[in-house]
Length: 200
Image (cartoon, rainbow, N blue to C red):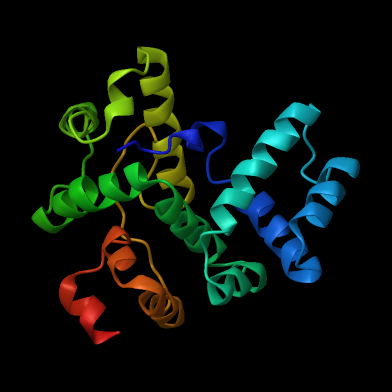
C-alpha cells in the first residue's frame, strides 16, 4: 500500500477550494473550469505551473466529496473550512489516520498537546504498511509534517502550528448529519465521541 502524499502541493486553501467548487457547480465540466482558472488566473498565482498544480490538487479533493457536501461547501462560508478538511481526510488517508489514531486518542485522554514525538512515532508505525514512507527524504518528511499541521491549524483543529494544542472543531448539526450520511467514520476525525456520532 501507498499513502497519497501530494498534499505537500498546498495546504487547505479554503477560499480557493470554495471558489473552484462554485465554478464546478455552475458548469459541471472540469475542462471548462480548468480553462477559466488558467486563462483568467482565477486563483491569483504568480506562475502558471503553480496554478496548474494547485488546480489538479483541488480537483482531486473536490472529486471525493458527495454532491451534497460540494453544495454545502459552495454555499456555506462559515463551515467551508470543515468541508475542505473533510475533502482532505477523504483524499489523503495519512491525514485521516493521524487525526483518528493520534489526535482523537490524545483528545479523549485529556492530553491536548501534540509533540514532535507523536508525529515521529506515528510515521514510524506506518512504514510497514505504507511502503512509500520508507523511500522519502528527510526534507519531504518535514514538508509532510509542516503542511499537515498547517491544514489542522486552518481548519481549527489546533491552536497554531507552533503550539499544536488540540481544539475540537465546532460542527453544526446539519453538517454532522451530512457527513454521517456519507460515512460516519469521518466524524471520528472531527473528534466526535461514539455517543455523539450515534446521536446524530
